[in-house]
Image (cartoon, rainbow, N blue to C red; front, top):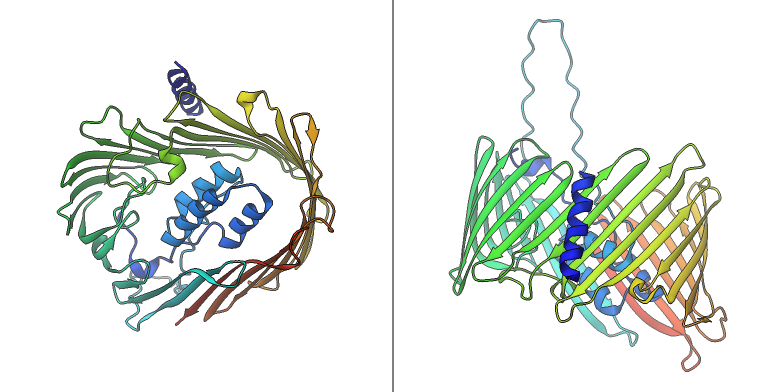
Length: 464
């Protein structure tokens, strides 16, 4: 009964709220909505658990930024949006007074190989290398080669695509994260339609057909044949968002993923959800939290008043319902911020568990100040639990941003007493035309151990 009521409420909310691929030389690589340093900051602040942090970091490493953004919104209850890709500047052509002027020729792809070499690593508190990965990305003519975390050779031209190697979510244009397959995939445009197919070394077969009315309205259907299972997938996207369904033959219910949003000048909202049965279909690469909950959803509503010191109010709710038992876990967060950039205070309150009548609540107040290249922030967070208020967590941060690079320092006192515990996180990011370097390192001390390293993360990318 609880499941039926939740599904009815979610569908009612959604109802009430109511093309060819770009050429390789005209599209930049997608940018991450946030970096690993912010994930470590949430982890150190206690906003997310270590398991949730690992899930978000894994999606960032895979390059599935859409899914990483989704996890951040549900786990950390923080706003997240994918940065819009920057289109290359067009050269201005000289106009003449003739009646007809010839169309400008299309920009030809670069024949000279260009790309980047990336090295990422994480270190534990003992200074030992916890994990690392290397990656090489080379683009030349209509080809793209990736080596490292993904071994893939891609050819793209005039909407035609071919992939050979480790093929996954982005290559197959899937809204739902997929397992990595080793094989070959082809996509061929036919006007506003496209057809695609994949053949894997494990004899998995994929066939896809799609239609694009315009850049916002698209629909695609897919058929999957695995050695011991068959599945049908359907996904549709509009200006309102995306809805996808994956049904494995023989299962009681399909897996459904939806991301709907609408943004206006004052009011904006976003609905995100995963819904599935007691088991998850084959071929999908879902996070642990999604597989363990038959309903994994969040709802966000934002209201802004630009004329009133840019005042903003937001409400966020997270709903989780485990597959193992008939229960519902809900977390609600309300936030308020107002004021100019020079002095902008904010306040937020979080109900940790609504099913327990909000016995545990978290209150956080902060104030931000931005002066050209400098920004400062101070916050205090208090947790009230079982009629007892814990000591406040005090945090101070400063950031200096000259051009594209920046340096950031965060000082945290978890129990409002530096003699009991204190942590310091530093981040230095250097960005140039040929080098990107991001270095994050943190130190911590408490009653039982002296001031010593806690973790470190290094990301170096050499562009050529």
